[in-house]
Image 1 (cartoon, rainbow, N blue to C red):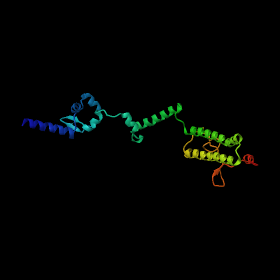
Image 2: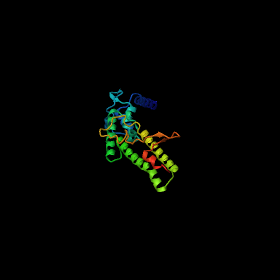
Image 3: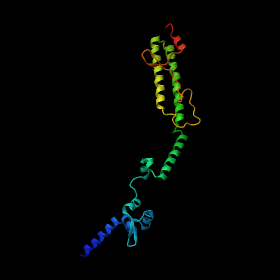
Image 4: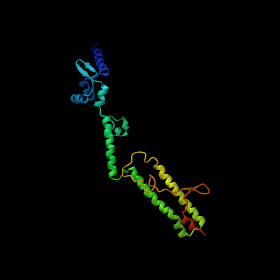
Length: 221
């Protein structure tokens, strides 16, 4: 009978811990920690009550402060959405992004949009000039007849038209927000890409119209 009485007493104490809370001493035993350290870690918790004059704490709430996570906190924070962070961490998050962006810009790994636009503009206009001279170079070195030169010129003009369309499409939203004070729009248009005048040929295809010099070049051929 004495054994059964002890079991009932132990069950009563277990139920008290589970449903009411555990004392600092009981938490120290459960988590194999020094009672002083347990006291420090649960100091911000509100006791769930008192038992025999001693404060008791929710085991689940205490465990969150006493058990070392089995995952890396840094990795969890990296995978969190910034809107889920508490205000203090959210401020640190944006500050960290700003600092990283400034460093990456300084070493050349990050370019501002206006710089990208200028580089793309210079590159496109350089290719444009090369392509515009290509038919003359081919005619001079290969001596193609007018029909073949017309094909070459049409291909070049089509490439220019499609290239400009592609650049404008990629940067179609550029310019909607605030712009840097030193932004330069370049030779033509907000992207700095020189306009390629377009007309429709007899078959409805886009093409670059000939200048008077280009029209004269093939007369008599």
